[in-house]
Image 1 (cartoon, each protein chain N blue to C red):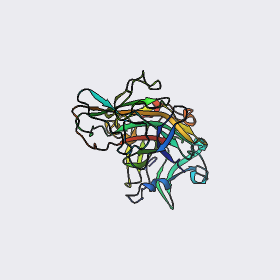
Image 2 (tube, one colour):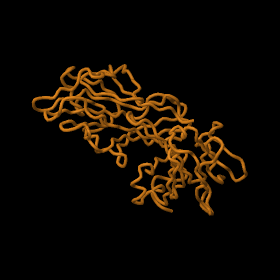
Image 3 (cartoon, rainbow over the protein chains, first blue to last red):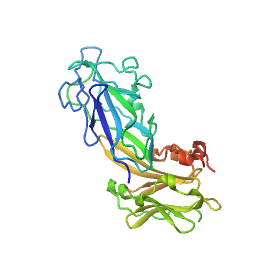
Image 4 (cartoon, rainbow over the protein chains, first blue to last red):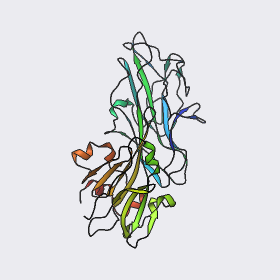
Length: 180
Length: 151
């Protein structure tokens, strides 16, 4: 039988994060470190410059073990920024979890290699990672292991003064992996 | 015909059909190693492989045979899953022989695609046909370069 694999959103302290299953539904970025912020702590539209969400950390979890091995993990977007004018999203993979910080209700700490030690490199627009050109994620899991596997993918929403108020269009981010 | 695909007969529309699909390694002496009986991919005795099948309950949905004059050492098989917060889960099966041909089986749509090589423009435009990463149990028999080279 194939493994049961879920997407987990990591929040909370770096030493003891909460890992929330976000596979069935959607998840929101906000200016808080909440796993399910709903419409609380939205990202403000600044008069100038940009406001940032708290970064969002996601990782795969094998809730049941694969029969053989899971490897060749990839992450990608649909390739088109449908968030609307003035809203972008950057991200990169990370070998470790770092709790998101910032000023709640205002802006998140910028996702940079200086602020997030686990990042593999400078965050780039996630829309450059597509199904045909995905981001390769380091890691694998083999029988009989369960639990978190592979690197995390961490992303952050950036809102510029040109953005429009309201709920933005939902985007789809996908994990892909091979299993035997 | 020394290699090919025998039928595909899963009705479209239900992604969970793929969850019912398992593999069978059929050997030259008539014995069968079955995933649904607990066998794992690494246990396949490639040197005496007659064919490799994907089976759904009660039926074979795909079967491939080694090229004439070859054994099954270059077998490649992967269950390839995509998980999206917005769009849920989908599963395809990638199988074939290192060096080609390769098959992408899509149980949800009841279709498959065959590629002689993974380096053709057509294959490169099919994300489901991206080269897999060789596993330790495959490393004795082929490398990533073998997957990318038509032989």
